Length: 282
Ligand SMILES: O=C(O)CCC(=O)C(=O)O
Image (cartoon, rainbow, N blue to C red):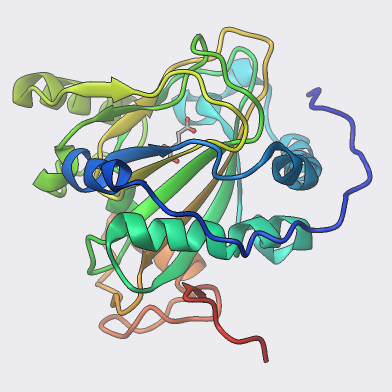
């Protein structure tokens, strides 16, 4: 694959300065299940951590079959998880008080913890991302969950940001389908049947961010351009959430992101630091 060549990484940016989140964005997340925050990271900040994310995606791609041999999920994106554990540059982004406070403010909670981060790169010729609900994977007892989706490159409308089924989060778990052909067909039928309005934010500039709630139905279109649609995502949940009995599609998450901690206990493991308010450094 050809992503931009590796460059020497700059010093990790200081993203402790917080932003005021517009009341319309807070309302939009609550009412529609999604919101846009333009310019949450500056271009200089994005450029400081983009080489690390690109390098992780490039390394991951070495072990992945050619696009045409993959199934629908594999064609949607190259996916690398929890980059913060291996790269201080990315950690500065994922742990940034600015982002975690934005998540807390949007959710209307005092305090949030990290669930996990992931880089999602839709390659040139990459397929659509099927309809799905993120929270179907998460054995957590709270509805106060949110995913940030931040492109690290400018995305033209032709590639697009995600499409959201507005209001779908209010109906909770809409079906058992994990991301794939069945989720695309079944959720598409459900979207039509229930008449959820579909909304997308179209083109995005690197450093803009959309936020969507854990139960918001969403999808993304395919990529028929030469662009590597490189996106960084971070998922947070309200502090105080407890671990629920993992269902069949949640065992990987329980093991991997929640460290197999006890069902019924607080989700407060080593991989789930409280990111807002920031914890005092020891
Ligand atoms: O990047 C994509 O195509 C889909 C991302 C997504 O579904 C998510 O971040 O929840």
